[in-house]
Each structure stands twice: as C-alpha cells, then as structure tokens.
Image (cartoon, rainbow, N blue to C red; front, side):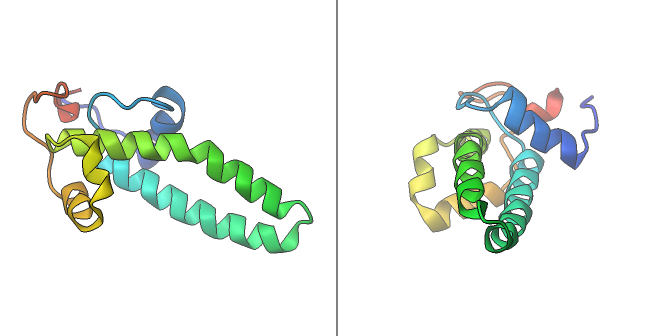
Length: 116
C-alpha cells in the first residue's frame, strides 16, 4: 500500500531527491503539484521583480534553478504513461498524457510509483 504524501512532499521530493532525475516514473500528483508550485512561485517572483531592485536577477536565478527539476518531473510523467520523454515536444499530446493515469504495475521505465 502506498503511503499518503502531502503536496509539499511531492514538491520537495521533486526539488531535492529528484533534482536532475530523468529516469523512472512520476505520478500525476507529483507532476501537477510541482506545476502549481511553479505557477504560484512565478506570480510571486513577478511581483518581487517589480518591487525589488535586484528582482530581475532573482527571478532569473529561480527560473534556472527550477528548470531541470521541471524537465525531470515532466519526463518522468511521460514515462509513467509508458511514453518516452521526447513526447514533451508535442504540446497538445503531452498535455493529454499528463492528464492520463499512469500504467498500472511496472512498465519499461520502472515500477509503479503508486506502489511505493
């Protein structure tokens, strides 16, 4: 039985444990909580960019810091639906794949993340 993770756990595991991990699989929850975190952070950073004199530099640093974890979780999300990460280059299809449930059980990219 899988342990229940909070949204914060998903975001933190993406940033810390899986920072540049492009292998394995990511659940829908892990992917979408990270996307929501990025959207909220972007709004906050946009506001700070206008207020702080060094806001643009801070925004750039944060954006680059989250680029690889975002790419990693997106690729792992494609893997969860048993597709290669290259499907990220097909915008509409990859969005559909992020909404679909992952492959039940193991697939060619690893074990079912819901089982852990």
